[in-house]
Image (tube, rainbow over all chains, first blue to last red; front, side, top):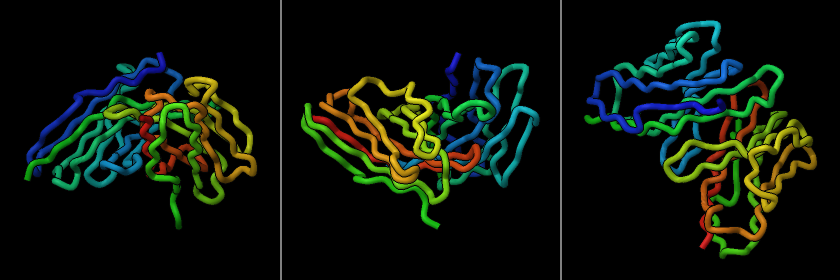
Length: 114
Length: 111
């Protein structure tokens, strides 16, 4: 019940295209859903995060769509660029009355072709 | 300002050796987390500190793993009698509210 399932495992997109990564969770107590970007040899860096009281959040080219009833959320990268090539992780945590430890998905390796 | 720093960045240990991994969190961050990231996998939670108190160590894989944060700032993750399965990247993160900021990690290779 603590798992977060992420798909696809890898994704190849042409420059200018839309990259879409999906995640699903089981634990309805999760109340914070961040997306992290990780480059080789670096630590994960926060991209964007959402709380379950909103269905969508947009920051620049990055959008999170959240479906509370389906227990799913997704990351959309608009106008994908070669510099976006990295591994992306979704995560979930229980912030209220808990440690806030992050439960990560398995990751998606994105390659954006020029 | 400075982010989370970790040292060493790389560590090679012979099986059975003890290792100590250091984390310097962002100044003022109350919460500190350790995660383990195996090759090609997402990070997995090891332990959590609020100031100097270790409030959750449910992710530590065995009693060979020990973490401390004696003054509520710098933290050390110690692994005793290292095994090959301990080879991974060890990530430290700190936070003030819900956003966790990660360090670059320490890559541990146990031979």
